Structures are given as C-alpha cells and as structure tokens.
Amino acid sequence: MSLSEAKRKATVLVAGSWGTALAFVLASNQYDVVVWTRTEQQAKEINVSHHNEKYLPNITLPINIRATTSMEEALTHSTLALFVAPSSAMRSVAELAKPYLADDTIVIHATKGFEPEKLKRMSVVLSEALERPLADIAVLSGPSHAEEVILKLPTTVVVAAENIHIAEKAQEALMNTAFRVYTNNDVIGIEVAGALKNIIALAAGIINGLELGDNAKAALLTRGLAEISRLGTAMGANPLTFIGLAGVGDLVVTATSQHSRNFRAGYMLADGTPLSTVLEKMGMVVEGVKTTRAAHELSQIHGIEMPITNQLFDVLFNSKPINKAVEVLMGRVRTNEMEPNS
Image 1 (cartoon, rainbow, N blue to C red):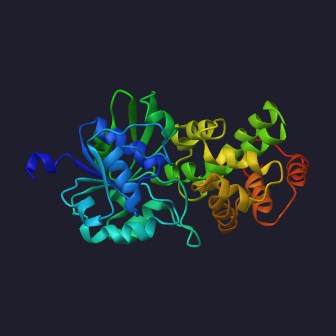
Image 2 (image 1 turned 60 degrees about the vertical axis):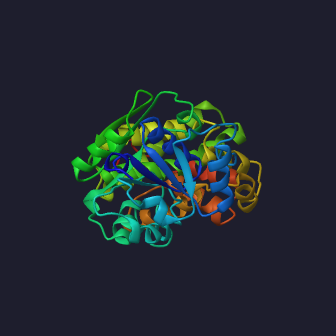
Image 3 (image 1 turned 90 degrees about the vertical axis):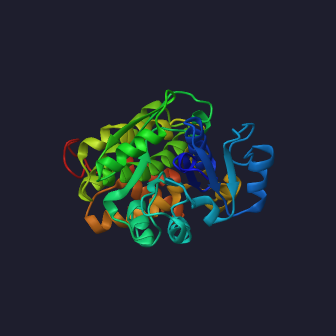
C-alpha cells in the first residue's frame, strides 16, 4: 500500500445502519472504507452484493466500502477509526481494536448512550479502553437518520472534542455538500444530549400510540429538553449546547419520525405490548431503553428532578400502567416554569 493510499483509509466499527451510513459518507469523500463486523455472513453480503439489507434495505453501497471480520485488517494503515458500536458493546469492541490502532489514528464515535452499570459516557469508555487522552476522542452527533444520510439528503451534524484540532480533522474527513459538519468542544453536552433524547423519543412514540395529540407531544419535547439540559449541566455541559444541533435538533428529528427506532418502540409499547416483545420485534438496538435506566440513576446521583424519565422508567421496568404515568405527570404540584427543578 502506497503512502497516498494509506492516508485515505478509514475504518468503521460496526456495520449497523448508522455505521453503514457513515461509511457511505466517508466513501463519498474518496476514502477507502473498511467496515468491521463480527459476522462472516454480513461481511460477505457487503463485499459480494454491496448490500446491508438488514440495516439499510434496497441500498447499493459503493465499491470503495468493503467489510471484514478481521480487526487487524480493518485497522492496519487506517488514519481514521469511527466507532459506532452499541453502547453496551463499545468497551469490548475498543479492547479488540486497541492492539491494531496506530497512535496517530483519529478516533471518533457516533454512539448515543451510556455504558450500562458504569454509567460512563462513550468518550470515557474509549479513552479507558484505548488508553488515549480523553481530549483526543471526538464525538459525532446531531439530527441524522441513517436512511436519509445514505440517500444524500441534506444533513447537518456536529463533531466535538476537547482538543479542537481533533474536531477539525474529523470535520474535514466527514464534511461534504450533503453532510454539513460543525465543530464544538463541549463533549459532555453533545454526548448527554445525544443519549437522553432517545428517552423522550420513546415517550413521544407512546404519545402517538395513545393518540394524545400534538399539544401533548409539544409539551413532552419542551419539558423533555428541560430535563436533558438540567442533567447535562449538572454533569458539566455548556447549557447552550442543548439548543444546538445535538440538543433540540436531534430531539426533534428523533421524537417525530418513523425512521426513529426509539419512536417506533414507544408506539408499540402504547398498546400494552411487553417490552421484551417490542425489542424482539425491532430486531435492532433501541438505545433509549437502557438510557432510561442510566438517566434515572444519574438523576439520583446528581440530585436532579427528571419526572418524564422517572415515569418512563417505571413503565419500562416496574410494570407501571402508561395511563397512570400520564396522570402522575399531569397532576404534579403547581410550579413556575423557570424554577430549576420544575
């Protein structure tokens, strides 16, 4: 491999819908993209038929995207590694990647969630597992359905890193005329916003399923954003991040679209379908479920009121009837909208 070729190789880990869409963005920017997957069957499908039907049906991938189950092959000579593993698998994937990741490879993640049990943000998980400075881990987030990105519909996102030079390198690698990328240095805010909006999207799906109306959904999004902002600020985020692309932008797109797994899962929950059945029918990770548990615990750790999150937690994990949860939210004590824990 020539030096010029080496400079244009990027690796995406793993080959879900969002990982495949981001591989497409990098391929459109003239990178040779290697997608790492755990299964030989998926690798063969991508390499032979140039499809990833389970995650992005009816889409033909460009020939400069190939797949492998070999982590060494995926990362050797790669100058950019984009981690898009589910939050529960991020640490294990990073540990597999570590021996083959060059010191100067740009590391970005695009996963929206917290590590289960440990409640750690994804950049912290990557920093620990890869033994890299936290400041050099970048995060990509914002309103971006994979189904629209792969069609080159206009999409605008944000990439954040404490080391702004890393964010700018990531921006340069990913940005094109269909995929606009802004930079930011508020990693905490970007990660918290991206994770917690999935909780509100679950609740929005429930509202749609119950036919509670647009008024209720508007209130949910508004008060949901207040909860996200309260917890994020308590964790050290910049409050302004939550009115940006990773905050209100991602919240709106995820809580109003059938493309959203979390929205669809909430819709199915509304008729009383058990959570286990919903997750089985979805067939893909619904990050909002585990994030609801994580946010519930984080709110207690930081002493933050999160009434929507807490009621959804009871619905998901304590078998609380949805109508009772709605009654509790609507019957809360009178308060001022501007009070810190309203």
